[in-house]
Length: 271
Image (cartoon, rainbow, N blue to C red):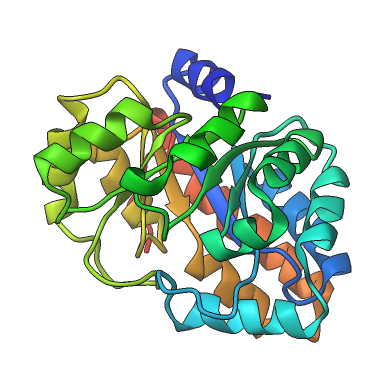
């Protein structure tokens, strides 16, 4: 399913997207399929599947450790695409990776493999819009959305450049700093949502620091079309590495609680 189709379908039900992030290969490539299936059973609408990288500049310690575990387990880009092909649920997959990985693999080859593997969008945190033409061209050739990030510090001029090129959805960075669970959602994120919403019709999805059902409820209240949760999910994986059954049950239950707050009639403020 294409990203725009998913957002349209959710919108018809007055529902917002829950986007769940995991690092492919954490704790090992074989377990990733089971992890993703647990997230889908819990109610995740879109899966953001990271390619582990040795220097993930946008990620906090939780996801850095996940990348280390994945790399230690033997993860590479070819195995990543094999994993994606084994996810058979009709749900959009989004790749998150750093540009060096794509450059080494080859831009056109990477976009082609994304298309063959069911990936509908790509997020590249360290690729500025000013240097994105080659990647944009490769994505357009294979009908892949290139998803850009907008932060509170993004200037109006730069935001306009991003909005002219972006596809799929806009990834709004809710706080200054790296990924990681936080106690409270940054109230300035509300202002960011209002600022960007005035300038685009693309879905807006809020990420970074969202780790509780109450955070999801707040983000939905800001008016976004989707909420991205990563580190809190990876924490569950890390805490249950030696007990996969318990890990999968906890992931499913956690995502189910998050998903409830993307539906207006079921919004709660559970911590």
